Length: 106
Image (cartoon, rainbow, N blue to C red; front, side):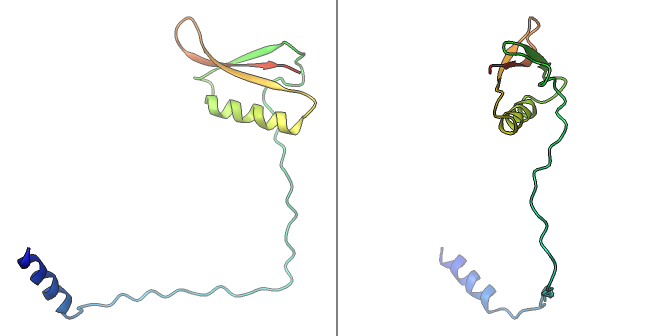
């Protein structure tokens, strides 16, 4: 234990052999540039939401798209269209492959 302490003290007392200097350029302030308005970009939804009536559903297998991506798209559509409502459930087919089924509930 004492030997390690002495080694640390010796390392601290050794002279510095090199210096690394980092130069950071400060950004220049610019005046008079207008800030763009924030707007929500609506993408075309690739699923048949508009063609569906209450009780209709469609299925998407996990091999076609990630389940998290599908649930995210459904959630986004629900927020953008408050007069309709879609619900997702993850299921397994006869072969054991996961898929998600989306129903229109309202």
